[in-house]
Structures are given as structure tokens and as C-alpha cells.
Image 1 (cartoon, helix red, strand yellow):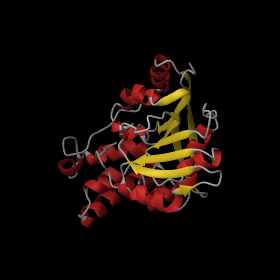
Image 2 (tube, one colour):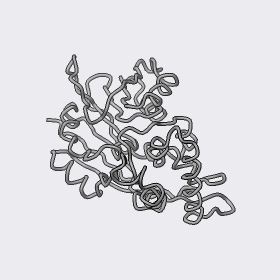
Image 3 (tube, one colour):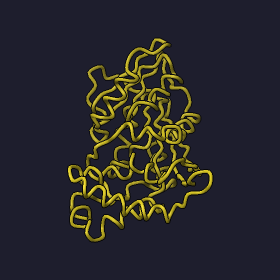
Image 4 (cartoon, one colour):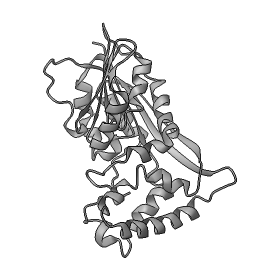
Length: 281
């Protein structure tokens, strides 16, 4: 799948499938224990996006001090508008600009986090596992680092996109060496387990494939417009003819790979999950 360093995000498009996109995060939270802190926990959400799943943290821990971090101005604006402020349990929900590669910043108070989570964001960071030691260090003793990432980069939705980018006439604008790269940064579940266990964490790693039924015409195209297709749309921004031409070719490929049925279009959605608990002592 081609990736730009900084895609332009569209919160409205992303949230069109909010129920399906938030389900893995709900399943992740179901295996996260309460933060081991003496008071209201401090929680960080890395790659918070439009804030809809960050708000689920406030539902689970209403007294917590929660900060969502993202490097997309569009996503942060939506999150701040919709969710920022005090929470009913006396906690707070705030959003800040940050790049996960540079996180955590030097905190003025030096207070560690009880929980650091990331939902469908680490796949955009090359060699993200190299940052695990830093993030684990930012946890309080007994704190938890939990994340989920897509594991469907070999699915037709992604392989067809990569092949199209590398084909004429697109390879001159979208192929390798033209500002887009092809990631292989998502590790296997076993690799994540090893990396986190080697850091001394009690680790739980698993994978799930959700068979989602997407509604509407060209449902898979509509899905990837919110995520995988964003780098291409960013690269072609300002050239509407090119956007229409590329989208038409990609649409035809997806219709063959994912034929619509009488009830919608079935789209397998594989995810990889990890929950790592730092030793209490």
C-alpha cells in the first residue's frame, strides 16, 4: 500500500464507518485492566484521529485525565470541537498536536501515564516497534500499553492499490521513488509478543478477522477513501481529472475483487492486538 509521510485526512469520510472502525478498539479495551494508580489515571491516546474512540476512554474511566495526540490538523479540529472538556466523572479530555515518533515530549511535571493506547495508527509509523521502549518507560509501574493495528496489507484492497500506483500512467506520480513508499512496518503477532515481553511486560497478543458487511454502492471504495486511499488522494490533490481517473480504475478493480451481494459487500477486516502491562515494581 502506498503511503505518504503526511496524508491529508477527512474526518467526515473516516467517520462514515465509525461503528466498524471503533469495534476493534472496544475489543482491545475489554482486555485492558484498570490503570494501577493511586488517583485518577493519566491516559494518552496516540493517533487519536477524530476523537470518537478517545471518548470511549472517558466512558470507561470518567475521572481520568485523558489526552489525545495526533499530527492531523483536520482530525484534531474535529476531536476538539466534539469531545474536549471536562468529563462527567470529574476528569478531563484534551487534544494536542504531536507526532508519535517524537512522543512523549519532556513533561514539565514528569508524571507518568497509567495507560497509553493507540488505535489503528502505528501502521503509519515506520519501524514503530523501535519506539516501544520509550513508550513503556513513560508508563507508571503497573501501567499498560495497548494498541491495535490492521493486518490486512495483503488483502486485495491494498495489493490492487499498490499495483495500480506502480502501473502506467500512475507510476510517474505515485510509484516507488515518487514520494510514496510501500510499508511493511506491521509486525506479526509473534514479533509483537517477543518485542514487548523482552521489555519485561506481561503481554497478551492476538488477532481477529472481522467479516464486515458494508452497505451501499462501491462500499469497499468508500471504506478505503477514509484510510488506505488517503495518501493517493493527497498526492493527486488539485488535479481533479487525475483523481477521477485513478478512482475509476481502482473502483473497477474493487468491484471485481469484492462483488456486492444482496445484503451488501462482505469485507474481511483483519486486526492485530497487543496489551502489555509494565511490572509493578
